Image 1 (spheres, rainbow, N blue to C red):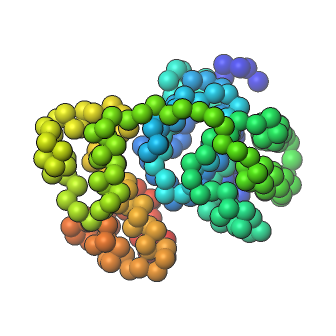
Image 2 (cartoon, rainbow, N blue to C red):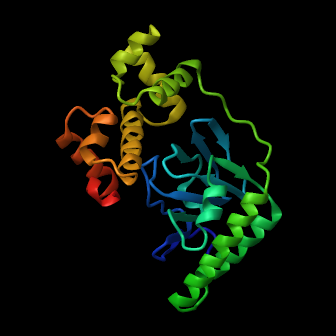
Image 3 (cartoon, one colour):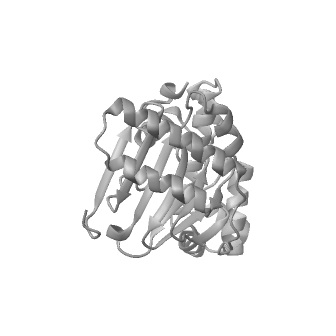
Length: 262
């Protein structure tokens, strides 16, 4: 395979999804997912942005992203050089206990034995075997990765610090998703102009403030609905002014109606 050629090997396996790809990003503009993600960065130039701050990723680095956690992988160089392996999943039979133990917070790990597992996965993604065999092997490797990550320590690294304005905005939104979180209201509370607030926030987080608020509210609504709340109650508890607006935004973001996540 040419080193410069983009490719994507994607396997939908029911309980989980696995992707081995170079370039060809397929999920852009959604920084909060209602599924867990284990991301292994292979090559290229990329940066992880989360509510902890910003960090440049180095090759052979694994990143744990729990569900409903804000994050963004920003490609700094050419998209065609961006190579990674990714598992996406919510619940996986026989692995749920390990998932709950391992996927609690964003965690960055660089360890040789984890690199070895993902090297095997790269070979598996291109191997000529049937779907049943591939599913068994991909699930077995996911189990190995979860065990390895659970036993590993987070690698030493330093996050780039957000500005005090951005940090305060993130704290304000987390404290009250039902409140008035318009740029005008937040800017007034901080004693700064709306334009300055929006510029600083987007420079740090790489998404507009209004989109960050919307995604946080939708993620929380999804959690409430999955725990048994009605879609109407969830919309109210997440700060949406009317149900029809909430329904449209929810379906646009997740691709399904709110009742799907009950």
